Image (cartoon, helix red, strand yellow):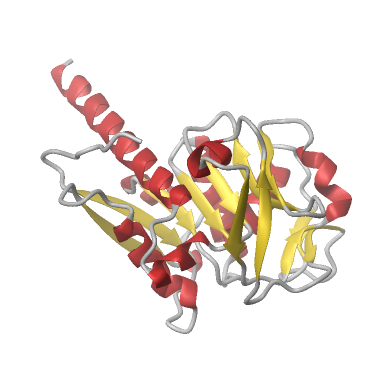
Length: 255
């Protein structure tokens, strides 16, 4: 992966969509994980928690000020619609997006509702009476557990890791309901990683510069001071996105 410098603008702005709590380990780990992904001396990453209650459909344009969006763990969110709006904004505007744990779950709901047109797709944690429980309790809790994941050939995830089998850390009780996994058999949102039983653990959009969601929490790698390949790719995509917007702005100013 080539290093990208930001020249006169020496920072990236990354929105952390979620409801911050100092009690959530992932919330403390994410800024450190992003800092580890920055090539030495190149630039600084500025993170900002964007609370889900502050995000509305009419006001979503404020997210355009960021170079990337990360939908973070910590569901149920105080405003599920706010999280879905942010995910949809990143998807529609090709803003680099990473969703982990709760972010993974809600990325699937957003895609089902707004791309596949399944308005009843829902998350059982937020709506126990969901008519279509797209996200449902796991058959076995993954809180505080690690697990092996097999990566599919030709995916961004496989390219980032450079191997076909990985081990990652989880902290979740909910995942994609296997009854609805066939929804990902066609379309642009593809499964890129599964566990030994074939349960979906990573998805990515094929028609987007960087849109990856994982049920596991790659940010926890920062607790041991390790750089994570997916986060490296996420930051790299954010630098490219910022550079592209800067070039477009400069061209418009000359016109």
